Length: 172
Image (cartoon, rainbow, N blue to C red):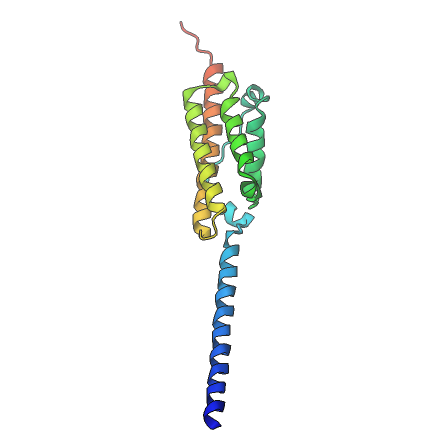
């Protein structure tokens, strides 16, 4: 009788202790899932040189809808909202195709196309990292930094192109 009682207590003890380990494992996994949340403060701490578009450049690309849609996405990413990247894959791909396909003639040069290709690559990389559950927050922040730098490089190149085209050199 004592032996059965002792076996029963050992079984209850083992089940109870295993349950606590399982609960802790579930809690740790749950916390790990939410490490993807990136705050606006964390994004603002990234050291990035930002370039705004000149008025002349904005005038030249005013009909480039995909660029301005991308600019809205950039503003969301700066606020820590990565929701667009978690949407359906077709939306992101459609935006990138339109961005590359509908470049205005005034700025359609190989250097700008190369910057857009880099932007496209970094956006797809960020999208894939955001949609994975096993990625740590520092990796996502690095991908955000690369994405924002690629966008700023596109802006810089657009400004340079328009500035170069509008420059008048008087020769003696």
